Image 1 (cartoon, rainbow, N blue to C red):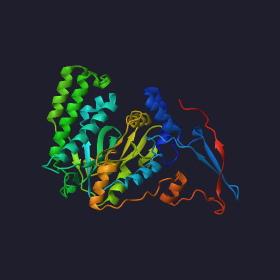
Image 2: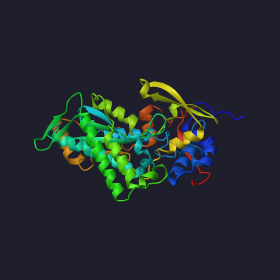
Image 3: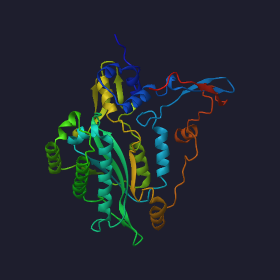
Image 4: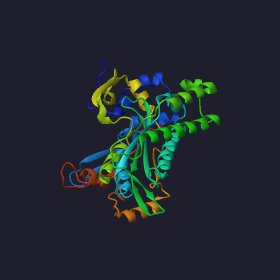
Length: 392
């Protein structure tokens, strides 16, 4: 009889101990294989590591290396802290709106075959929608900004591409050197945003299809016919697209805390896993259709791994992007001018120049340089642990 995994389970345990059925019935792309290996071996002897030794009592502590893959739920904490710390100096002292842009599920077959292309279109259509409406004198009449974070999953780990966008409640009018605030209740009319977003996305998609840039096979193979593709486009024009604008944040402190939760999130965290054995993997989900009630969902291990790997991003793909006031070219010019007029004092970085142990001490209060046994000695580096084998 197969014994269940130790409790509490982690995503790495599923990849390491329960992946045999998956490898028999599913094929992985080279990119997915790289992520699979990383999650399977993160912080294990296979990745190597180093040894620390107490200079007083001789206590030995082993640190195994992290995989540092952006899809690994274990490796996002330090990255998130650094990113949030850097972002704090860029934000303006104004209210912010959280706007979510979602594409219809009918596009999922195209997304699976063309993730880089479709995700780029999503970013492009969203940014052009917000910036063009912001410049419109009927609305804000100036340059606004946007920080967009791509998420590709739903609570059940199925494909659900959407952008989480943080947008300041207003725009900068360069001609008048003035900040034009938006309404306190909403950033821009949601229906206007939704219609323009849909029009721009479908226009970009038609351009890609006309240039034969789309890979059309598998479930999306039927779209190789121009008639079928036109029928899909027409059906997408007819249905409403979902753009959701949440209530504005009160201050930059709230927005920084919120962004820290969203920026480097992966498809599922270890905290959501409830149980994992050779029959099923059970995890918590939030049912948005049932008043956000917390429920549990069980999947076979092979299906769980398959769904997780649906969200592996193309190599080198940038999932966090900055537009308008927050674009790199505008930070040293327009953004600084805007801050000066508004009266914003620069925020100093707390983590710049620190190593990961020093950062951990500041963020959690854990001083890893002190011996955990005798509490007197210092943990001194004592040597390397070599990797057991090279990645595939």
